[in-house]
Amino acid sequence: MAEVQSTLKVQIDFGNTHFESSGSVEEIIPQILQYVSRIIPTYDLASRLIYLPNLAGLADRVSEFAKMTSDNQLLLTKHDLPADKSISIVLFMAHLASKFAKRPNDSLNAEEIAAAVKKAPKTIRNTIVNMQKAGLIERTDRGNYRITQRGLMELENSLRPDEI
Image 1 (tube, rainbow, N blue to C red):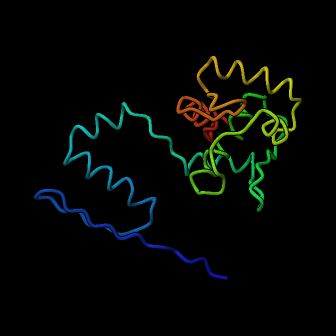
Image 2: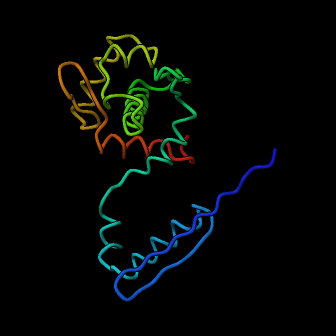
């Protein structure tokens, strides 16, 4: 079966400027960013200072460690990871699943986390306390936790291809 190659076509008109290009997503995105940086100089500066998680890239790297079942259960596939990284991965999966309307919210309770990462509930609770203090996760309501922007950044940095 032949692989279908998709081509993205983009046209942007901003003020008196015009941008038009086509190609793969990997080719087009850098071109768009370069165009926007050129016409809006403050965008280049802001893009260096503002953290926006690369959810697609992070999902690709996390897919080596975790999966979501057809009934939306989150499962860690590698169990030799430290508890904090395991928790971050599972909470990221919940975050992503909520973005795709596969879960009603992006938080999990300690029991759900323990079941997903296959670690003792006491280990999970102790690790959650430390991760909260570090600002990596936050409590959403009674006993539920979600990953923070800082947690996403830490996870993204810890799963760089050269560090896995």
